[in-house]
Length: 404
Image 1: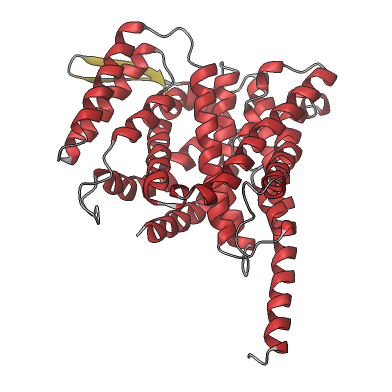
Image 2: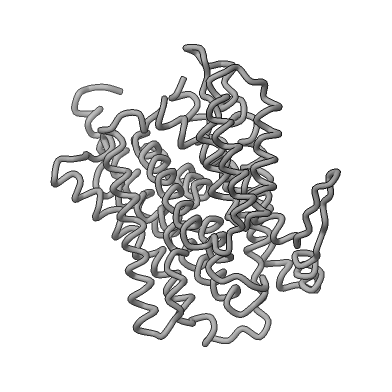
């Protein structure tokens, strides 16, 4: 059951990569067309929402960032919980290498960014941006070039990306949730405690929908990042009370929300955040310290950290390579982790708050898009070569044993 759920997740997320790419490309085209003014005005437009006495007013950009992306983080939280309880992460031996690789994949990009920022005089507070991995895009590239590679590499990539995103979520909560109002936050904590207690009973799905809505609204009022409470809420959703957990609210939520997140939430976020106007853009801004730091943090820092930690885990015998995987194949996956895209863009909006078409936001987008593109191309080349080598070895092995 856990294997089927993981494969379903991989299939959905990999397929959505094409939609994400189209959304990002569309944003770039629109931002550099006669529709650019309408595009940026639409994102800045303020829209209120009132349900009875409850009232919220935010720009379209903020609705996407704090509203729709909360659903994304809810799904990530559900995936984390399921994998820990019933999936790949339930086996400590399988968990150790990707966990250490994920930690290395966060430390090294931060170090690369800070080194470049110090040398070139860039802003120091941009270091969290190259730490994240975009699960959907990474799996999409893997699906395109991973033919013939061992299935264990997919699971390794998914596990690493989940842990990586958990680390990114923790950073978001620690670094970007200032000025929190204690009153609404206490209500959030109270609702989460009540939900955790009631999760031991059979509660209908509408309860969890309403509960998430209440927690989300109060989080907005408190000033806390909705990403944190979305994951916290996911962790109290019950897995199930039966052995087959077919009626589990967690599984129902994962099944129901995956298509919306993959084909609506993330593409819409990509369309809103990837739009970069190149009008008046000079070489000085294109190669600004912030751009270079983010791009090289993703393209160099990620594979150095992931590959180095995986090798160290193997050398110390506290972990091991994915089954039947070579170090060249693992290098390809390590490069693939540098595809930060939506997650890095999201952190960029938090690290440098302000207008979406401001100079610093343009530099953030250039760095993320450049680093993600280089990582995707580099990973595709290495994984394609590794796939050819593996297919050749399998063919030679079959020929030597007389198997056709």
